[in-house]
Image 1 (spheres, rainbow, N blue to C red):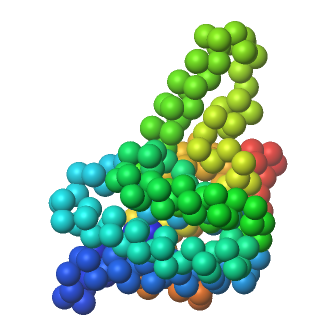
Image 2: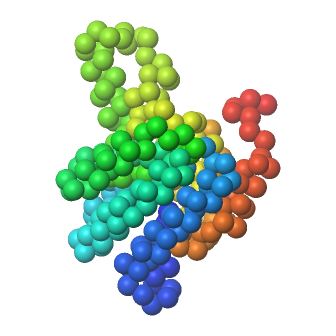
Length: 222
């Protein structure tokens, strides 16, 4: 979800207003995705590299996160949306961790759509933690090194339990993955759009899904 700051700059507004508009777009896209029958939607909200941003911007982002969880949890539950968080969210402020834990527990049995939010997430960190967990399993004698396979790795990632990644959308004209779902994106379709995230709407999502639907997926075959 890239481009909040550039959106605000184009409109001569503070960056905080760009992030606020970005949250409004999140609400809209989650609703639209549910209406379209999307099984799982993952949104990259805050990366493990974002801590290098100015302190006041991080404070604004964390404030918006608090507001979003508190204001939208009822709608999640009413619409059958299961919330999942990937990344090391436990490193966030304790009150945010409590809000997230409560939301995860409250929506755990919902089955219409899964909304995964990436918080304090980085794919390289995710893979490192997964390898460390597998190494601990080897150390305990639960698995032999030569028995480790792709399923072990996939099961040790934060996304365990989510369906395979079909489509990865990158907004704002940037042509890179920015440390997002690197393992999971091995055979996903990639879609890049110049639209800044605050301008990403139902029509943009429909374009992305149409592009996905028009492609032939071979997964390395012919």
